[in-house]
Length: 427
Image (cartoon, rainbow, N blue to C red; front, side, top):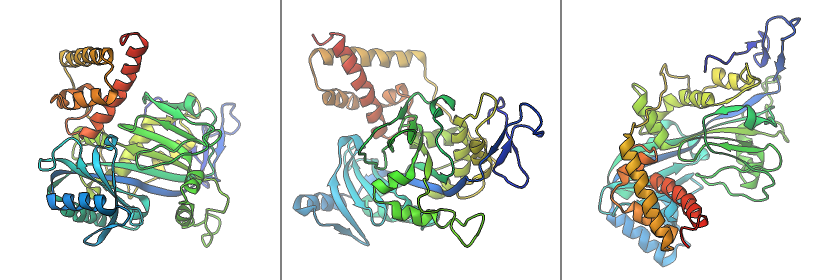
């Protein structure tokens, strides 16, 4: 926590009663009573495991053959069943194998490496209902089982995680965007959305006023705060989450549930992209995270780092009491390790970065003048053989997957392409 922010005093008899002074008679004394606040769930909402290695050509042929024959039926591989579909290039993978009943999505065959060459060819995404009923050892065992099926040789590569906290008794402030201190360059707040869909990479959108906010980029550290009750209802997952929330005993009567029918549950979600986890591993002494078991001991520390980087203020002097409570009292899977969590960013020489900028700018002007499609332009840069320089330019670590570079490059090119068109370069 930054030193310039003062913390609140707690009431002895009520840990959710906060004071900014010890004497109620003092003029500056402020009391905040959040006795109605309750955490109903905390844990990992989504976990993604990347593998690097060589694909099993026989299994890849089976997947391709099954899709061309009849993709309406599930593909049975050993003890697993999957619905097979093709993936868009934006995902970075060619095939999607889903078993949402189990809570597993497998992404197969990288777009950016040949099938018989080493690459990040396999990715597994685990949903909450898979993770909630398994310990970390079982999660990693499933990852090994699946990787052994689809890959001939493999190594655990990178991981990414979404940490979620569900609570009631706290309304999103009207001035959230003003009072949230963050270095994030991008933020979204949605209003009046009638329909939306949320996938593992998506963002929960706002229904009505002050119901959903997103700060930060999907390719970095991102904060989402939204009405989980409405989002779960829209996705037909409300029954599942009500069963989880109902397991928390009431403070007044431990034989009753703290969650009551009709309670509005909000969710605070910390989304760590795998490039961010890799930055922590480089910058934090003794930290290594390439599997779920290795990640779990760091979840509480990472969540506290997130809260300090997206820090909600009560006023100019005090952090918000709820933020203080989440920082000091909440644990994710267990207590925090005695680590000083730091991210290591690759330093770049100014000349190298300048050369890449000139190359991107000049080449893009030529493409715009000739009216090439943005798809062609992105493909040109991705096949240039200078991926390491492009990763450095877009502040991605050397270990970053080509899919991450693809997203960063496409976003940049689409924005510049439109700017150049409107500036008359294509005329």
